[in-house]
Length: 568
Image (tube, rainbow, N blue to C red; front, side, top):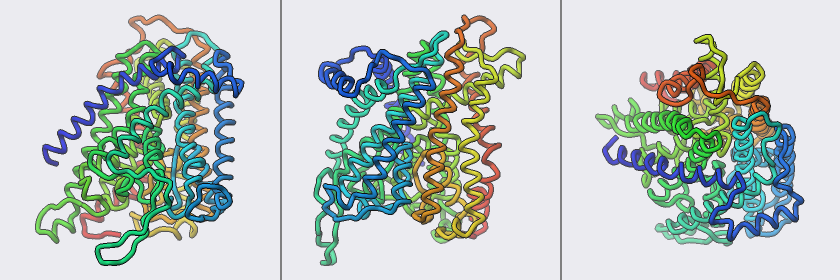
């Protein structure tokens, strides 16, 4: 790494640290129903939405009704998206004349976008019409992110409130998130991306003359608007098959920097929203520092692994050379490592490089980010309640160690909350490890592999982790557009998203009914370096114990094989 890379990392984290508290307080104001400067323009729109839909924002719901509302709304969106994809051939805004997708691909894509995963078993510019991209997918980019943020707000309220049975109104939260947070930010970022060269047009494409005198058809479309929300909502599905490596979706080093920032902006800000809700800003800064420490470690580890290259490259060049395979020259090694770490640390599956071309250690960083459960800032909403899960486990384990009744922010932690937290941990673990084992042991699982050996196993493990943890990025090399892969990965996305969400809602609902105990000398401190270090230890121990055997069969062994001169 060179000084420029270090300065870029410092600038990136500095901007994120400066912007997040302000946006976090704004989100808190919006979600509490208080007035903001945007209410002059958008307030009438909000009230109109309530009137035509029959929403009564002051009628709060129990955690069960709140979770049920989220599930019903997501199911309706899933059905709508699947129908749009299957019947896009007879729908408008189809200048390419694409026919409808297969039922299993439509199921996979609808599950993917309804769960904020955005795994793509298709090439967007050669498979989907503009109508499918905008109505089927961009719509889901907004609402799936809004569902995650709304669920997170309900969980935060349940922790903060004293002996309550209600955690907010899902429908009001949904409207407020979309109207005051996602839409304004998406417009600002879309305008900036257009200024950098991201395309925004209804044209299907253009015929261009190549330098050799040939002809090439270049696909176009409304990419800037989808790029903005895919990043801000931690969705990740690209308008083009090459995703953020495509020059029409991510043209410059500056656009790459701000696309990385967009992925982390809302998840980072929600940490400070939580601090406002529980009236403990020091706790919010502690959580943020935990996330930032793991994120920076991941960026530096990935960058150093790619900068160091491979043994074979060093032998061929007569010295150490960076691994530039699968990377865009306009981003370089550090810009690629920053983007890849941001995309896998959040639930944003965007890619600006071929992850399968990373060195084994670089790929290990990306895999481990996802396997931790998207808690390193994580998805829009889901990252924060995932981190709350680990903090509840931390205070429970610490209580056992010192013989003290554990409590978190004044709420006593009992067996019910720990049980639901363990359910939330085990659901994705069983999906990832179980599906990876079955796929690796059967012909249908191995049939789509591009590479053999340990790298081939990494392709399978990465796909299962990406879907079950609702990330959506691809290691590449795995041809997953088959009925079995589409259905199994689609089911993993649905169970991974809503299984964890409902488990955390149940844990929070149990905590909501309890009284808040006043802080005393016996209260467990949740601020400062000690709590941060203990939480980090729990995160890494749980991650290591759960996934180390699988990682050993993939990137760890591949690293040793690579040093011995064997590649796949």
